[in-house]
Amino acid sequence: MRTSITFLRHGRTVQLGDIAPTLTLLDYLRLTEHAVGTKEGCAEGDCGACTVVLRKRVNGKLVYQPVNSCILLAGQADGAEVITVEDLAEHGTLHPVQQQIVDQHGSQCGFCTPGFVMALFALYHSGGKRNEAPARGAVNDWIAGNLCRCTGYRPIVEAALASCRGRAADQFTTQEKTVLKALKAIDDQDDLFVGNKDQFFAAPATTAGLAKLYGANPDAVLVGGATDVGLWITKKLQTIPKIIWLGRVQELTEIAKTAEGVTIGAMVTHESAIPYLAAIDPDLGELLRRFAGKQIRTVGTIGGNIANGSPIGDTPPALIALGATVRLQKGKKQRTLPLEDFFIAYGKQDRAAGEFVHSVHVPKLEKNERFRCYKISKRFDQDISAAMGAFKFTLQGSRITAARIAFGGMAATPKRAGKTEAALAGADLTNEASWQPALAALDRDFKPITDQRASAEYRAAAARGVLRKALVEVAGTSTQHTRIVGIRETADVSA
Image 1 (cartoon, one colour):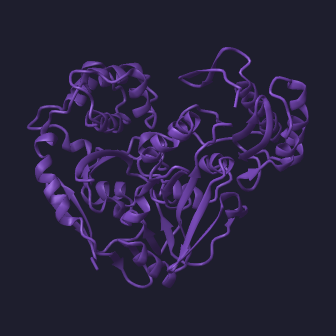
Image 2 (cartoon, rainbow, N blue to C red):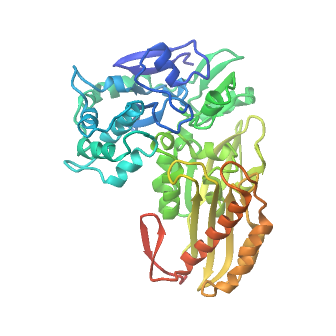
């Protein structure tokens, strides 16, 4: 068993063996290293001012992941190299990204600038084609997790287009062989345990080790990406004496494709899951793209979004509509249940003490099935949903023979719309009058609340609106229609 968190900084190995379990990477950088170029803005992973890059060894190659250091635990840097804005310039010469921010006048007050620089530094190392600039939309996606209140975003985007052309060629690329070797040396298969029986940060290396540790400490908090737990620490100021991070359990990061669907390990990040879920339906890819900015998607996990049990989590309604099942593990025993049955009440899931989410299985769509999902939020990108609706229709010609409909933000848990599903059975996509009973049934399925994100009346009206939108799109009332942002498809109601 290893007893210190280990990562690289400036080519040297850092070992932390006597720290609070809740120490954030930002606090370590600013208070211990005095690396104050990384800023605290919102302390909730929303503004991006605290962005740093983790250079990690994945499948024998180095990847550059932008992360929000304000809500990332220091222990989550274990096995990686931490790169901050102070590290980019070499011998007084600015990094190409930094120089273009200067040349394009992409900074004014400067508070957000280090975060933008680090987000674009990760884009710079994202593996672009030779001498080819990224698409403007791709740049916007990379900086969606960074907010600026001075310059607007045009000069920052121009800086990205000018600097992030082709393959990376900087001091970091020349170091990669050395860094790979150094990271491989600290990437052991030992369990990590820092602390004592009453207060610890632990990171088991196997599911067996996780099951044993969590079974002995069912009061510990399991952490996936810490994109929610981080706020318990920075906003609620909670003291969490026992933390078990699942990031070193290789089995939980695996994705398995079969003829029936895809099984996604609990620690698969949203970013990694995008191509697999988008292959089931493009709406799922768009949902995950809008789920959050890059900094959140690179660490936030599918399993964490499920296990957290939030009624406004975006992935559970979509997965419920698709008929997903969740696998749970306690000790050596595993069990599987429909995902909708996992959520019992607000803040309560069907998960015993010492039991954890192992994986989720998502079935593929059959040829006669159509899927749609829609996220409704105040901001288009990187915002918590006011409501989220997901729909799967089974068709025979233009007639709906069965429906699975699930909503988030409309009840105390992600919930299916049973009365609406029943009302849709037999409805004809070519006859809008046959849809009306289902639209009316939504008011019997849900009694939403009013909160800071939306009123109950707005949520109810929005739910009816997205149900009708799904029916209109699947019905194909025009030969070419917009399905989701950026995607157009030929209308087709045949099955």
